[in-house]
Length: 498
Image 1 (tube, rainbow, N blue to C red):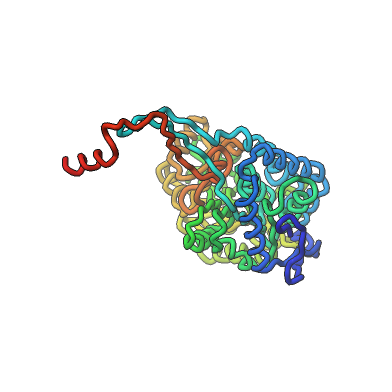
Image 2 (cartoon, rainbow, N blue to C red):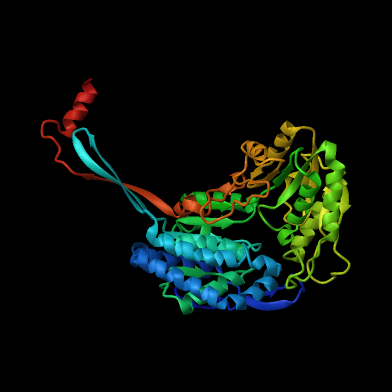
């Protein structure tokens, strides 16, 4: 762990095992932090924000972020296999959004640290005889607690650490006990290969998530940046409300892949079946509902089945495998319970649904396809977080829109049609934060990411995401003397008698 600039063990001296989900083997141990460790980290972050120049020296912050970026690039190929072992992420995915890209984005945050317009001057105004210049200042939020999940620890962790440090905040990072090494690796590099001052960046790991609850209750923490499930997000928002902390919540989804009648249904259904197996379906933007027109329903279901049957999966370190394991035995039991519930509700199991015989070790699950799913069925409403696709028929475009929007979530969606114009017009009526039209990619550093409804509060990336870590201050500066003929008291008296 990293607390106040020092690499330390837990106060209790306890550790917990880190398990490889592909093999069930113990690959290492991690410090099991106590509530007192979290309190110490918060105190260090508060001191660093209040008593140092970190929040006021943008050039220094930029240099520190570049040092961290360079350290990660230098050690990237040592870290990559650890990510594959710890999370079960397929190695091909680490060369994109789950590892390489988040590291590159640190350069963008280093640039923003110095280039962002923190101070905006507005034209002078004359108010009651007082001419004033106004300035809008963006100032760092303060102490930020980052709480990140196991399914994409590098993307989630660096997307919080980067803007927090760039804006001048100090940071306490708590990773998931199922994937703690991202945080400990970055903490070690920050301590040993950067000039980040003590207390600015802290890392505390714990086997029990409740050990870190102090992050949501301690009044010295100004903001919570959380990625995880909607139930956990609701709990964090509720507890944090006692001290009115700012909350940035990137939560779950039950995203729809809508195939309009003019599209090539077989091609799109096959693509949807492949996409749900990306990272074993363990992604908040996973398109877990496939909407197909009734007139081509069985054709689409069969195309999806063929794709799943042909998909290569297994050892995540093998670059030929598209899908690896689920994160843990506990999570696999949860996904299997959803599958059993779907069968009990009358949904038709078309493919998969069980543990693969050829992969008895590890936390693997077959790609799973359900047909004859109704919009209100459990499998169509609850986030499963596994390689499970529910295929739902629709009569016409109006019903497709109604089904797509029939969710407590609103994170993402895909719309496919014969033309971009048709798909785009449909996308404008979807209640989601992001939409892919005919396979278009929206994800980039310059666009905000987040959801509608119970998919979260706030945005990551883009200007909007950067400003989540900034407070707004307005300053009025008198530029001309107040006229002596009309003092404030006289104005108030005239208004009172008028």
